[in-house]
Image 1: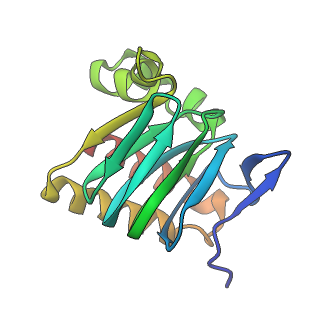
Image 2: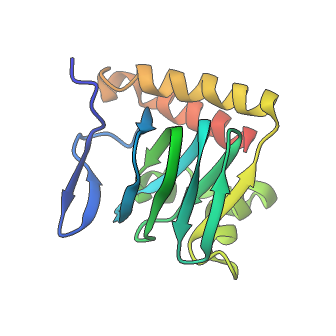
Length: 171
């Protein structure tokens, strides 16, 4: 079973290579990650180590518990990585527009997923820091999403949506 991230690159744009609405997986940045952009939403949870996140709004040091949400098309990268491990959660715009359309009307989730990343000075990026207990809860849902990667989408779509809902609720 292939455990590499299901992400490809075309014309400088990262995209999901598998037919799935969402993906979660750990990634260890052993060296700097060059600036890039993607066609999907990314929520990166800092799990260990440290790095400097670079994006249009500026540079920000990241340590465990820090989270960055990036809208599609936003460029970013990591510099000065020192044992920096992230748990990435990537999901499609279609999933947000269809299954999660209701979140626009929710005061907290509407800000997290729709308005917040667009408010100045965010420019498509929203960053938060989580208490350790909340990070642990998020990692539980991320792990469950990662386990669903190789399951048939027709049978597990509700599970994917459920774990994403619970993950968004923690954020």
